[in-house]
Length: 273
Ligand code: 13P
Image (cartoon, rainbow, N blue to C red; front, side):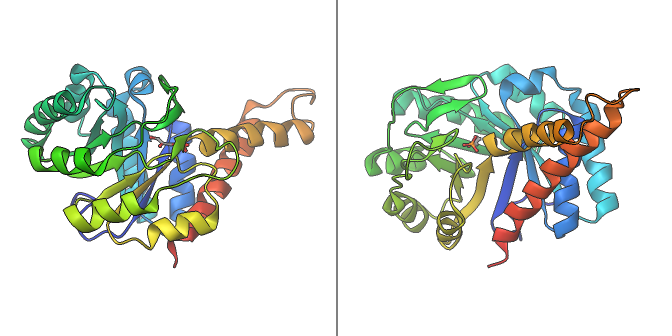
């Protein structure tokens, strides 16, 4: 299957944590007839049945008539990246953004060398996106500088770049203060596909504005997928499913699946502009 930078407009990437969450996201994608990226953080990747997830995603997406790619999100461990490549993940993110720019460049180059041999795409981050994404916590915002973006892209061979432009992992406190000019600068001056992190909590208008910038290729959404899971449990509780005689786990699971699927459908509709 062709990688998602070829022939695809912008895509949404939803974080998943097991085969059930993958199925719920794929059901949303099927309902919308939209291609989709499923991604896992590095910590969760290690706990997954990776080969079985790959097989499931391939066969379920094929049956639904959509394309689905697997991406390893924020990873700082080269052996995990190597493992994901060997398990046929389509793309990997090396997150060396905590390092100084020269070190970030050096580590990224080791990953591109490893990944490109197998046709696996590489995403990397410049600046540091604030907030908490699974096992990665960044306390202080570090918006990328134009100099670092230029230097990074001149000295690496990455396929996609994530730039810290005021975006935050987790929900935003108040109105997001996004530096759109950095997104425009990166896409216009470098032509490298841009990845937006911190998609949860961005309004429809903000997402549409980002999607209108040519070169924005991937918008990541994680926290809100997990919130949908929680909504599913709340719905199950409101329906009294936890108090039924003869508790039926499958009925609770269905509420969760429905909640995630509905959320994914609603988000994917934003691509119809
Ligand atoms: P959110 O958790 O804010 O949606 O961010 C997702 C993300 O950027 C994953 O890398």
